[in-house]
Length: 145
Image (tube, rainbow, N blue to C red; front, side, top):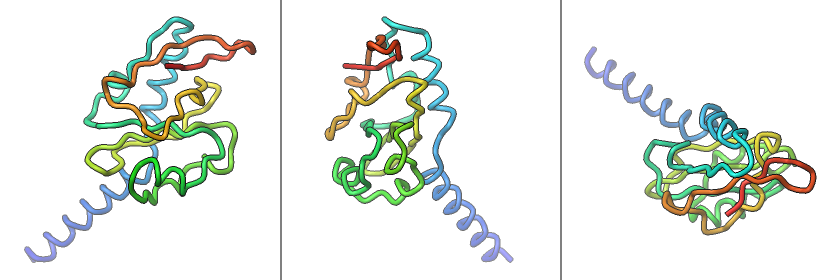
């Protein structure tokens, strides 16, 4: 009975870890959108938007291939197959990494803040991940360095 209980607990933990690493975090995307919608001049600090532990954040623009995502992250990430990034021009992919593993990710709607200018293969540390909101020529809210 104890061995069965331990096996069930281990399976639940493994399933929870799998869901955490593959399922997107809509709540962090919503917090980011809320900050962006505060308007031009707002400084968005990703360490406040994502207050959990992470080392680097990566932003990928629409149509980024999975091979490029893996190369930037420095490891293969199976969770990218759940993103719309390869097939949609309506989202940017945001990926938070800690100790060589994805700890959070989400497809962020471009209507809630354009992040294309933040796409950088090196990503950003917590200290670097502070960006300013501005309006582009089409009056869209844009985050930039």
